Length: 220
Ligand SMILES: C[S@@+](CC[C@H](N)C(=O)[O-])C[C@H]1O[C@@H](n2cnc3c(N)ncnc32)[C@H](O)[C@@H]1O
Image (cartoon, rainbow, N blue to C red; front, top):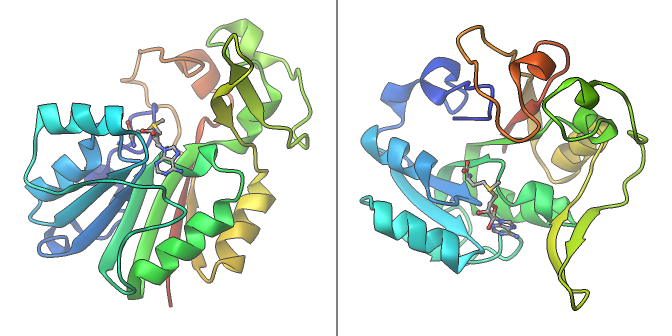
C-alpha cells in the first residue's frame, strides 16, 4: 500500500509487473512492521526490511515473515554496493531525515544498474494545510515554502518526533542530484470505495487535494 488513499502495488505495478518480482532482491526502507516486505515475499521476491526503530522491527518480528529484518539508519546502509534490484519505501525514513540526499545516494549505491527505487511521502502541498481531516483542514494556514521542520519535544526538551518538509521541486532535485532518473510522480486520487479517515487523510480532503506523492526512480 503506497498511502492512505489505498493505492496498492497490485494495481499500481510501480515496482514492475508482479510476475517479474520473483527472485528479485528488494530493500524496504523505513519498513515499520514490514507490510511491504511481507507482500513482496508472497510474490516470490527476496525482501530485506530495514528500519531505524528496534520497536517497529519487534512488531515486524511478531507478525513474522520469511525475510531478514535490519535495524539501521537509511542514511548509512549496511550493505555492499549493488546488492539489490529494487528498493521501496511507503512513507518510510525520507520524510524524517534532514538530508534526504544522503539516503537517496545510499540507496543508489546499493542498487544494481537499472535498479528501481519507488518511495512515497506525504504530498508536499499538505504542509500548507492544518493536519485535520475535516473542513478545518481545507484552508491554507502556513507557507508551502517554509522548510522549518515540524518538531515535537518531551518535557526535557528532547525532540521525540521530527518531520522535514521538502517542496515538490526540492524532492525532484533531490532525486536527480542523487543520480536517479525520475520516471513517474504518482499522485493517487481518493477512490470512492475508501470511506476511512486516518489522521489528516479523509475522503473530504482527498477529493480536493492530493495526500500522497509516489516517486518512481531508476538508477541508470
Ligand atoms: C510512517 S512509518 C512507515 C512504516 C511503513 N513503511 C508503513 O507503511 O507502515 C515511518 C518509518 O520510518 C522509520 N524511519 C524514520 N527515520 C528512519 C531512518 N533514518 N532510517 C530508517 N528508518 C527510519 C520509522 O522508524 C518508521 O518505522
